[in-house]
Image 1 (cartoon, rainbow, N blue to C red):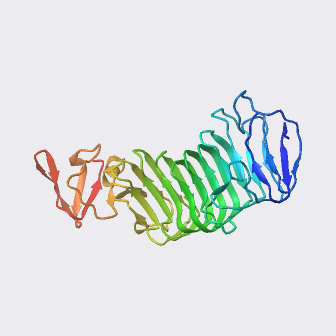
Image 2: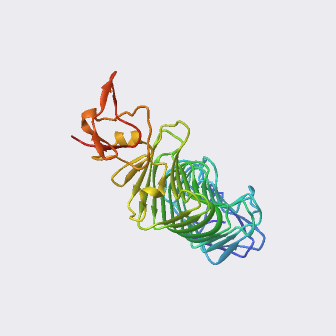
Image 3: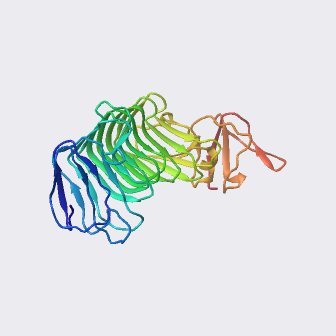
Length: 361
């Protein structure tokens, strides 16, 4: 059962949807699945041996549906196989679908590892864990261009979990209550979180910098039992977290945290365009240049900028001054200008409580 142009998918409750999205000959049709049945949906594609959601037509699963059974082959409600790296613009849309869990250790939308599933949208849906404790909304593995919007979530373990690379994910107008984690993105890049209201028992948004890139948070409310937002450096890459608009972040400890990982030489930056976020809200930053916070003093010194300001006490045996020479810095100790003293090719100033102004001349 399939289509050549676009299709609307409707069914009664207790549907297990296994969207394997493999090559198949199609005609335009409306598909109705009886109660308790399993629907395997196949889709044509331009590649002979591949599969995926990048052919000429889009699939919209729509209507006032309740999807409440996880009897698909791998125990998830909807499984998406992208079929490979072949480019395309075809879309898979879940719209007006009520997802209800019927067991633990399942996901409502699951992407097959290394299949590069892409252009998946969840819109105006509900995710209900139904009392189960380990249910995922989206379990993403090598996925691209993912959108979740206008959706209500209750009781999930994760709204979205990026088990491996997730590129260009947007979450907008999502309300979540009683979740363990909001968005857990160990390998995410180019992430947007906008107009969210999340009540999380542990952490609201967690981002590792394994993939580098930028995450933007705008007009979100997060009430978390632990940290509201964490940006963790686990790779020698640059990751930037941007706060826009007005954000209300309430965590049990450390609302916003930059967290270095062991001895990895990561560059973690937070750009704050939100007047309500102050130095005291950001834990783990050594210094800032204007409204840009850095995880270490060395990263700030190596960046371009007129003034480097310490936002916490920093103690170092030595500090590399980046691309500038020593005479391009002015040093202050307790507000008093001091002159570094040279000894054995190194320059020393009094410690502790050094505030350094990083000047171009």
